[in-house]
Amino acid sequence: MLELKKIDVMSLAKISTILGVVFGFILGILETIAYILAPSTPTYAALGFLAVIIFPIVYAIIGFVGGVITAFIYNIVAERIGGITVDLQTVSGTRKQKIKELYKRS
Image (cartoon, rainbow, N blue to C red):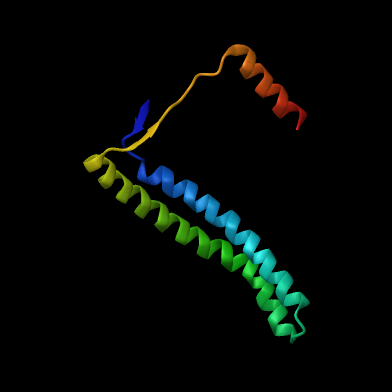
């Protein structure tokens, strides 16, 4: 068993930022589609297209701040009560080869 004692704050912040950008972009596209399909004025359609730009930026900022806060709190809590325990297993050569073959097929 291995224990996750500490999370690098910037590492989690970077991952959270990237996830925020992807999530924001998807929501921006959905928002644009909703504005286009809704019977409204052309101004609303322009706002929909603007969502594809604004949502990823906003969600990236939220993801970054959330990642920093999450890692900071986790590190404090893990130091006091212990980190998350993980049971890891090494993959044998033949099994590793099968996994690589599955990824090549996809």
